[in-house]
Length: 523
Image 1 (cartoon, helix red, strand yellow):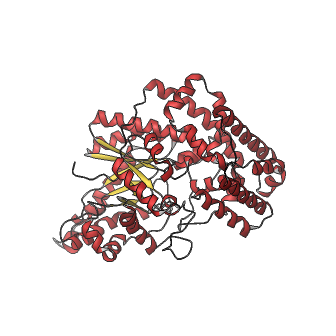
Image 2: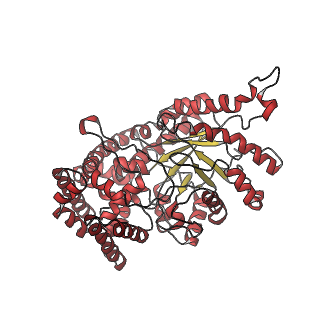
Image 3: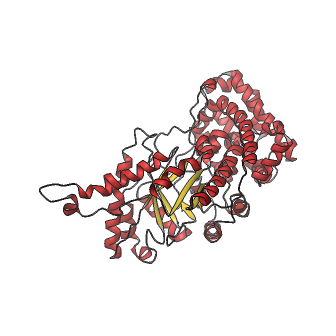
């Protein structure tokens, strides 16, 4: 296949605590995001940029602006052949209010083709792939591709006056088709990713497929262990599907810098590559780009470009998958009970998380069966930030379920999650017993303050304390600050909690951001 598959995809996820020097104000938006795309290509060496129209406004003239402003670079690196720009669009089945932004994004694909063709003096399609979030069935992907072919590219055949057609009036529409990258995010879809793709592969007969597996939303919805395990099961199913349908499949994984959201950072690169074998493309999110030294980021991107995919993913046999599903059920039940009870406190703290992108309101996937109710939570980044700032790293929530595992389940978990203990150790110093003791002592006042029930708050805090004690016993880990930096961090988040309880918003926001900078990410 002639197509170059990108290994590194720069994204606009707003998880950075530190702002880049070239941004004016506190939010990266407008032309700054165009400049950021060039920075990702030129300075960092990223092979792809995700242009995100899901839940935020983006510049639809990005290709024109890139070629006009950075023409010398793009003469050497052809957009759409050497480096890539990929839209993430709203899913019209889910984002009901924003669904027509899909049309705006798709119609700009042939516009970008015309601009690039004029720039390069030959046929070039700078955008030919789109990412469809929240994909749950094959019809989602088939419908999007067919809509583009019939309603965007196919519009050129519509007759106007007499024998004249649209093509005669405003020119042809190219490319004639697009590749759709399904973004698989929820529990059921990750477990049946192969069933989702089969109808599309049979219908479109693509030479290859890129499939995007989420890590952040599954972590928010189901907890660390479940998110990692679901991802491994999905990767195994993709490999089996590739073999059975004779189509190349190139998995993408969306990861942040902390273990809860994937653990891709310069200090964990070797472990990351070993954990996510078989992945072809990884996201380079904002915290990695701006909270670490530039040279470290460049070296990380370069290593990923050279080494991905790192070995083949391990095939999970049906009997092993059944054991892993049992593990998921145990961890998910405990995690969700705690999060449901803690939701009012998490939402209250998340209001102090600074915006880094001009995002619109978004309701995430998090939800329970009707028998246990339903809660709304912030996006994964402010969700995680709130918990880190409270001194409760979200990695540990629900891990009391370790005590419920059989010997066979323990063995299966260790085999699946190779760096489990290492990941927990890397965030052990962010646990604050001082904050937890304060929450335990003051839970009646806190419950009243965040409009929660006292019993729910008391039980949730008690469950978290149990989770932490189980981790210490299971792994012989000492949780809590050890280094001077970690002790300073605990002082900062303790000051945050006091400011939060005293209803001092300016002090609370300052301390939250100070802690995030020590952590090197918001969440």
